[in-house]
Length: 477
Ligand code: NAD
Image 1 (cartoon, rainbow, N blue to C red):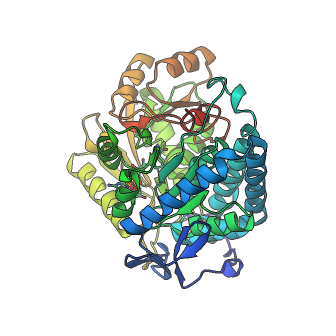
Image 2 (cartoon, rainbow, N blue to C red):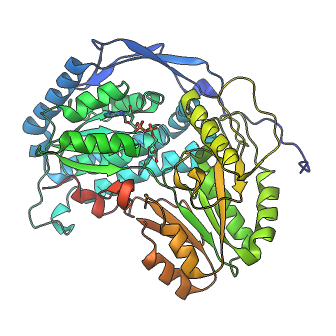
Image 3 (cartoon, rainbow, N blue to C red):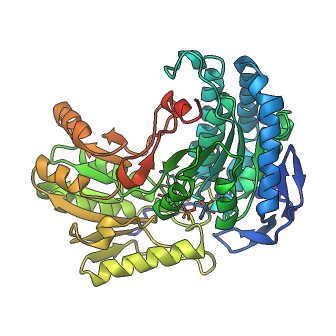
């Protein structure tokens, strides 16, 4: 549908960030050269090289784990909770003060629209540090025993879809509980983690309490396999999560895994349709669909399917795709060439299996990695696009006739991270919420995140919970 009017460009200035030509590793409170090779991090929207990043090898990982151990033994585990809280509050306030810088850097390195990094990611990051700062001196009241103790050194490996937010989900509870950490950001999005390292320096956090080692899967493997870590926290793909679970089996390391998802977003015939359309769009096109809990399977009641799909297509046609730093942009770039290849391949499988593809007609930029908002109709439960995580802006649409059928289809997945229910009936919401095998169920909304609320999955979506009071348990004896 032609747009009734065009928006003038409204780019956020990137002058607010100071990207260095190269970055070392953050070990024991300082940036140091790594012993390994280096790699480039690029802007996925333009393929411009942003910086050269050190790749930590085993010796570097060992140095980081040792620094974390010393900081744990000599400083952090000895501080009373209220002292740890002061550092966390300080970090939270600096994140707020430097929020524009963090948001611009996140959008540059990740490709996500600035309005999301500015209004969603960074505020929730600060909120996480504030929230867990509040717990640091109240751990004995958290319901995890009368005298809860830290575990020690936590090895934390995170993905590229919410680089800073995943860092906050990992680091804030770990530090609040008295652990020290070595965190490895994803290889395509290391820059905000390195800026966070500067924030730790600015906050005068004792050296070694937070260490950041950059690199790819090999660095992650060296970190989680290091005998000096007491706890492994991983967010990423189910395949790597399984490999990690195998590698730590038989050791005393505690593990939490936050893995993939294939969430059902279920719309009943009495749902407020336009509101549901907004929720569907938010569910699958937020962050280009690079969301583990994305509503990537739309289950719509047959009697309203035609009407809903018409409205959905009209709404999708108004989504603005392009420069992530433009404040009007709704859909940014796909994070990497590799991820784009996977999205294309799985979409082609959808075509080959007989589903019908519809995509927004738009001109894609010639440089960078882009994929238009897309939906598939005529999808059956056996189709790979209904079963596998595409992790991109691609929605698979299925229909149902009764609540029982909706439930059966929604739960027919190896995953169990999240789900959405759209109906005016409170009783139906409660029935669905208690029968859906999903860690989070949203009713008449989608993709709402709050530090006070636990998040995590069933089945192949992983185990353990992050967020809320429950999130403390993963970091306490
Ligand atoms: P990935 O598993 O390939 O990589 C995640 C991280 O693990 C990266 O930092 C990577 O370098 C590292 N890694 C890779 N191989 C490793 C190994 N053998 N040992 C240790 N570390 C290793 O996943 P990805 O493609 O970066 O991220 C997308 C996936 O993450 C999706 O499946 C998505 O659903 C999932 N995810 C889950 C959640 C959640 O909370 N459940 C949140 C965000 C993303």
